[in-house]
Length: 265
Image (cartoon, rainbow, N blue to C red; front, side):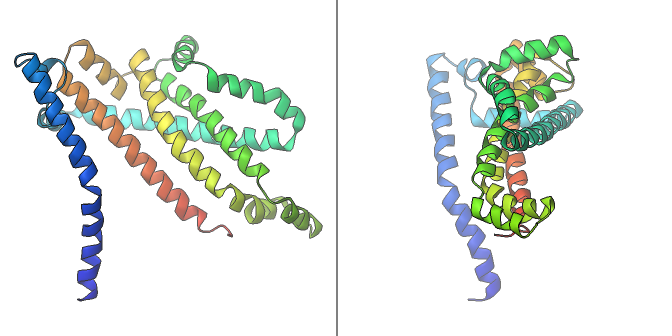
């Protein structure tokens, strides 16, 4: 067997191992849609649960319209802006609360309130204070911030105190302490916060779009299809939102892992 053949067979093997689960759930969807359709005498496909083929046809039709790509791009930019802001603020607050016990006593309760409060309440409040185009990014940042703060705080406290003491004894600069001692300890916590934060940013950002209806936006399209009972289109827009969340999470995790390879183990 040649090396090129072995290189081709490995991705094929991985693909075949991953196919059964999606195929099973597509089968469950198809069967459920058929049963609903039969129960409602031919109206189930339009009103409650469309067939996978119907959703695919709707998605193909939507992809040919300019508003589809405008909505995808606008929502993606809002979520990325919120994710970046939430990650930076969360990291800064984690460093601040771990550095100063006074800051920890002052700021920790407020961050925990943000984490515990209902997303809808924040959406409505932020909508009163800012424009509707800004709300999704602000809400995404607020939902990501506590997750990043909690995860990175644990990572900072998990740094080996003996290594830190040794670094101070050798008079390491703050930059060296960060890159040589803190970042290796933070690596798994950073990846965990990135994975969880990406999903939260998408959920909260699109939920904010559904309530404040900016244009263009995925959330606005989801609301309009629900309002006019265009159920196949509703499934199609939802599928796009889920797919974008998974793709973005995958890309960010791969990028973070490659970046982390440059840190000392």
